Amino acid sequence: MLALVGANWYGIKVGSIICSELTRLAVCASLFSLLLSIGLYARSRRVPNSALTAEAASSMKASAASGRCTFIYEFFMGRELHPRLFGGRIDLKFFLEMRPGLIGWVLLDMAFMFQVKANGGIIGLPFATLTFMHLIYVADALFFERSILTTTDIKREGLGYMLVFGNLAWVPFFYSLSARQLITNQPTMPAYCVVGVLFINLFGYFIFRASNYMKDEFRRDPHQPRFANCRTVPTGVRGRHLLAAGSWALCRHPNFVGDLVMAFAWSLAAGFHAPLAWLYPAYLLVLLVHRARRDEIHCSAKYGLAWTRYCELVPNRFLPRFYQRA
Ligand code: NDP
Image 1 (cartoon, rainbow, N blue to C red):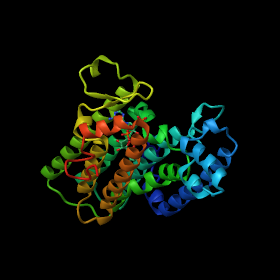
Image 2: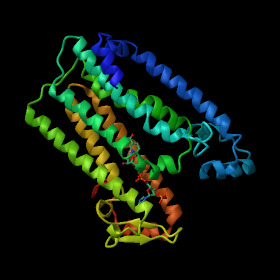
Image 3: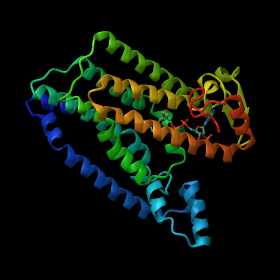
Image 4: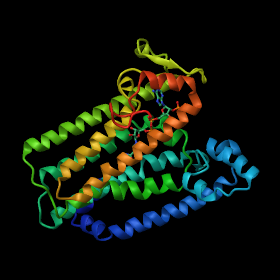
């Protein structure tokens, strides 16, 4: 990021270069994702079963018995859980989740701001607010990067095309789309509206951060004194408990709700004249509804009656009366 600022300072029009090459960069990122996924798939055929995801290990047995080919599904979902490089020093999935996509997203935002300046325009308050909110989201992920270790992507998903393409191509190019829309189409907004947008974002961020932090801490050590008075459901699975306190008592996916509120705030900052800026919250809603469904199928299979008990205690999935338990 400093290099980008420095280059711009010395007269290299990085914003214009990146903007004019944006399609080529996106195509390259997509092709590279495809090649890397092919390499990872080939590698996963040579690793022991213990290095595979539970799903890949069990589907190997099932497809061997039935003779069914699961290649496309496994290529997409990934087979190896934690492919490591450089003698095990780099966890490739962790690296891809945290570094290129998230940082690339902020770099593109910066390039779009430089482009506005190069066009002789000024960066309006809504544009600055939008990119600031993106920056906070990415900085938060990097600052609290330890929390990612207890997320579904790290714990259960294989490193396949879905995560590789998602992190290398989809996150930087699609998540920055709202900022890109504003290069030529900045909304005008009174300052009190911008303050309102920031407030909505802060509200979403608070729910997102507090719930992710609480769940992460609880899963690391549920016996910490801070959880002494929290309502929990014992599962009988390796001494695990399910948390039914704080935001986790209000709904079963409070962290998803916070994420959605922030996505909504970002589109509000982009305004209603840039319809493409509203694609992100719509996409995220579909992604998180699907993810919640997949996660609940997993939890129900893993925790059985304890999960049923937890769902009775916490009947809301997201919000009361919205996408509730069937
Ligand atoms: P969670 O962090 O909610 O993790 C789900 C897992 O947590 C479950 O599988 C279960 O794991 C455990 N769990 C569920 N409920 C409880 C409970 N009550 N008490 C204790 N443990 C519980 O989901 P994700 O990993 O999917 O998401 C993490 C964050 O990433 C979210 O904030 C989400 O919004 C965000 N995200 C953002 C995306 C984006 O593109 N912007 C995309 C995807 C996610 P176990 O079986 O191990 O017990």
